[in-house]
Image 1 (cartoon, rainbow, N blue to C red):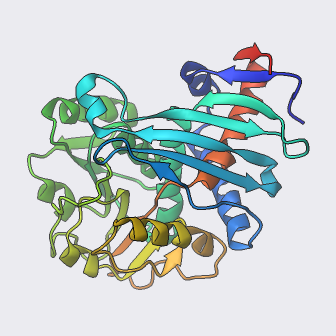
Image 2: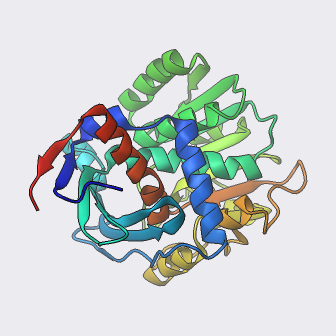
Length: 325
């Protein structure tokens, strides 16, 4: 039972110290999605407000009875923040006691948002990628490019990674730092096509855009590849999207919600969601030569799967600041 006599505030540094490793995060998400497939979670589509072009501030509530998790994430994404020296993603998570409804923790959401997004990619890849995949292409060398590579490197024996970013300094630091961290050959490439054509696993991790720049064209993704588009369809042309044999998402209802807002106008409808794949209700990869893509939207279920574990670990480590309600 959480301590509801006060509120525990966890800063970004506290959350980073208390954060579980990637296999644990993947396991937590696997449980949450299995519960989702069984209809045992509550998660309305996330409402949002938009104060500038291609920015968002979203409220993301969810309840997972099996994990004793209930709460909301209030998160913003502002692409222009990178030029201001500020993070693209920022926000807070509030956790509520499932018995009394009393809020017992408030924590920075940055680390959790990154980690659970990478874990969702890994979970999708477990069902949609070829187990023998050994090359990866990362388009967008920021936080998400890094954490998605960490997640995939934990599942596959990667021998080479191709990295591309429109910002040369970001690409260079990614090549240097991730190569040292993972002990994998990482090659910076000047053109997006070079990161796509030679890869078994592809991650596009740029800003989320209402109108895609559609850089990736038909014929670039080779047969047998798996893609994780963590930036919606921002990188993808209509022709390239039509080549996929299986399109999955983490929540069909929220995918439809975004369609009504004007996103995904050239994206075929998903034929499976992640919960269905995890629960075995829908098949994963079919033929070895199939092209597969996961367009995970980033849903509250994922945050609520991880945040209570961060809280428990932080309490055990004596982290955080106690505040009166």
